[in-house]
Length: 208
Image (cartoon, rainbow, N blue to C red; front, top):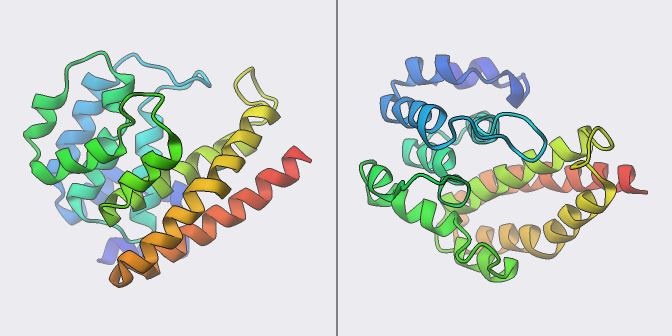
């Protein structure tokens, strides 16, 4: 827990996952991170042109910053986009990390890819860990798009407005429902939800 005390007064971007895995002895997470970087997302780029692996890494930095250090949760966060974005057959390799990881990744995978977003969020509510991962996912995407608006074809006000609309309509209600469904985890969910609501405000300022 010393590691968490060190980052308490810093930002999530300052979370060093290499130091975290060493101090917390999260060797399964380290193995999953390497597999994703060197296998599932090798050579892949996000729509903004950056290496795809940067996104799941940012998610894990956010989760660790908020004190979410359960290894299965972090591993699922690393793998959360792989079934949708990778051409590699990954289910068998993910199964090696246990049924909890497989379940969480399944919840976080839109099947089919155009699955109704409200229904998708409702499925995520089956497990509070999936909710936390999705909140970290949306927080990173909102902040990233707001910060980089007009720096490329991908970062447009239209796309940002759609992110805000989805967040207000689906993500925030999902988090609020999760706090009722999982009261023992409501504090962490509330902390992340506060950050998302602030990110929405900042995004709206950019869009105006």
